[in-house]
Image: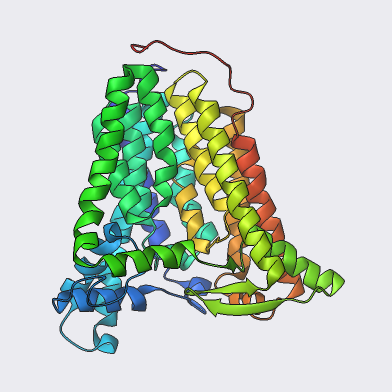
Length: 412
């Protein structure tokens, strides 16, 4: 282990307090100005849940835009609330869905505590920051299922730094099957195992992740290959989303220089259309891939400490969010359980930047979202650009350019 472990009693107390604070945060999100002008996805999830409760097979009998690992988040509330028309069962579905999401948040906080138990550094501040962070982001956390993959990814990372290497990679396989973004952690964790336990164990762990992912996805691929392929192409083929970094530059150019800009609604989001938007979408994808490869490569060449793995994981997820051609508000949920784990002064600055990004996001979402997405309002365009530049700064702060070279032994 990299550092002396914290006392289990202190870790347990900190985790319990964080979960209780998170319960208060969750309650507060249902009151006051948070209740105004909601933009929710739960009706879409409810439709999926009702179809499953009716005995229909996802991807074959109805279209679904999410990976198969997300299905439990729709099926469970659907089975609990099924038995009437959508408008009648919606409250029951929402209550069940939110209860499940709260439990996922509690799991993520507990996983953070287990990770901090190993890597050392501050304990209480990161946990309380993550427990209170939803107040800065807003109610998007209530009606999106992103806490499910975030909880699985956090639990996987906690297991790996705690030397439960195979369990951790099983959890990462499940997380990637639920939403693809945790897949950016796998090259890092496999490199970590390779240096810690050797090539054979690393390949076995990689095989576990791939096997679990296949176990979740392949049955649906066998039953409904066209439906699964459609869900994949819908995600990969998305145009430049209006809240992305590239779109933010176009919106500011539109308002400052009169650059002609056209919006379109497709793929479940508001997007920017036209040649410039298409070019920036391609550039964004290339930059995103290049930065991720750099993070993986740089980490693989440096000492395999648990703290370094945590920082690289935070950098990878942040780069995936900041440089992508799609940047929905719920993507910031992925950052909450991992960025506060980064140790030292760099971790403090990283958390402050994350806090700024969360607050800037809530300025327009959900309260003024359509003024930004449809009207390209000038002031909000500048706020959007500022938020995205904050995320870029966060990614750059976490990049591994100052990690020392070297290796550690397989038994370190």
